[in-house]
Length: 290
Image 1 (cartoon, rainbow, N blue to C red):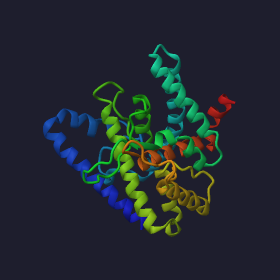
Image 2: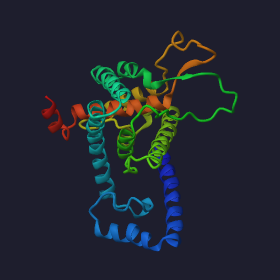
Image 3: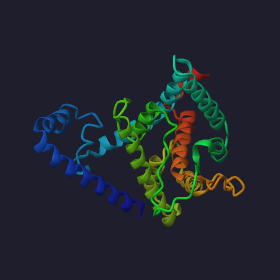
């Protein structure tokens, strides 16, 4: 079942956390003492306080509070990311950067104005469709997202959407945020692969809610049928190329193709925007914007 799949995934994460604890304690006892004992003990009401420990130590109520906080974080990230792009379009930045940000903002505006997510994805084709200069002869590796066009400040907001604070947006360090986003997208792809085989019709109400939250799909006031419908649409779009064969024609020994990890990232962003438009929590934002 999907619940069992999530349990196995959580067990793998718990093993990584245990290894981190085992290595941290002998290397830096002081850091371990303050990060793993003092902070959680002083902040028991903080839903993120015990997150560094395996899930065995997690409180069910705090886990639920963390989930609700994460949904709100995602809505805030939409506003913050647009603000970051706007600031780079008006601040004292190189002309090339300003031009690029203005172009990205126009593309985003067209995408979020569409009624259907499929049409929104087509507006984001420049981000989703990648050009391969020449065909690689190496052994095929799992596809990775191409994050080169996304500003570091927005990548950090993406980390926050996945429940990770991320590192400061400064050279040399910020590349670790890219790696975190890649890992989160890889875990999501594995979950998509499982659901694609299992089918959303088999999901219980709680499993459907979990799957929707994992994909940034809003669940406020939604029935089980609506959640399953949203998940079915997600799985269709997550594996469906947005470019047809005529667009994917070869060019100078290469070809265009859909980067499905970029497409997943775009889907996550579009669903976060949809929550901004409909969530009760975002009412203040909508009032301000209107």
